[in-house]
Length: 461
Image 1 (cartoon, rainbow, N blue to C red):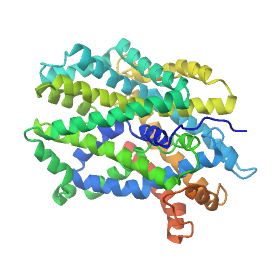
Image 2 (image 1 turned 180 degrees about the horizontal axis):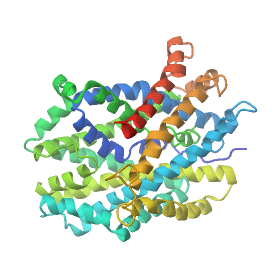
Image 3 (image 1 turned 120 degrees about the vertical axis):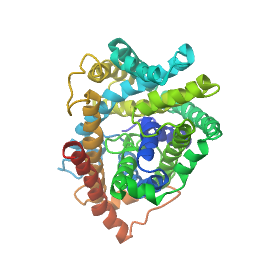
Image 4 (image 1 turned 180 degrees about the vertical axis):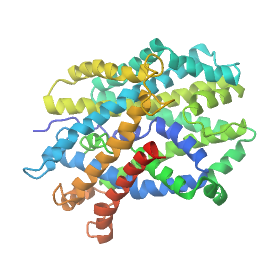
């Protein structure tokens, strides 16, 4: 009998699942891709793809989790027809969760370090732009610093998971996500009131066809498609686990739509913080990792009360990073509990050791292992790990979920639709032939295109 914990409240589910989706990609990747892709036109295309692409796959992950009552450890085993082999998908999906943590712990450590530096040390204040840039480089070049902050992120995330679903994951994430939204709103109000920020707001909210054509329509379309896919953390069961923890009171389209709205709200608010701030201080919002660790610290350096606002900004980033750590670690821990029936605390202790060891190549990839450049000069271990999860395991895993939910050789459309529409709230018509064709044929084709385009961009452009 399945006696697993459930969420204590629906709000807890929504905030924890949203916390999994909301991560550094919303705060860093979305603003700089928006800047690179011409502003508001990209945002509109992204929102369109989020609805027709990200939302359906999210509904499928939730359905598999709730329909089986398990995460990926036993979900496919429970729902597949006798003699079928869908359950083998759980192994690459588990690998995907570990690969994500192998570099996300280091990146999260950067956030914690900058928050600590802003609040406790303050040595970024009063420095020249060149000195601010060198500060991030010095962090990357220090093996001891990188390993320390990576280990802290791992221990903190898994430590919260060790407290259990309700007392740890749900309770702390609810508090943290509530604080995140409050901090974001405060920062938006501060930034848009800066002299010159109005031009950034216009860039962000007013579509400009000339900018769209300048960037190339297809480049913008594929950028929006990729962002819509990756923003929800779909494809490796990170959402299926939370589906397994919720009751059947509410329909899953309603729950999935709420998660998309919360995820999108954070991304949009992040854009309102980053892009107007860059315009106000005549800086470019297109600089990849440097946007967070070089460009924005220079913005705070020039602001009145910049140390306070910088501290709040990196606290918000730390919350966004930690919410994803907690969610993915819960998926990993639940896997081993379901498979091996180990006590939660034993699984957590084993994974603290395992994740720290597995994360060492990334933490040392900027210093001791900097000679390893898998994609040529300038690349590093993080780039390889990010490519494995983002361009390979996530899209392939998403295809598995789509085919499993729509094919008669998998769980099947009828079973999927029944679970999807159980509960009160928004329903999806099971008799809509256009929607059935879209789910079964067009949706997996789009995911395959994302997968192939990622490989083409990496190896042939």
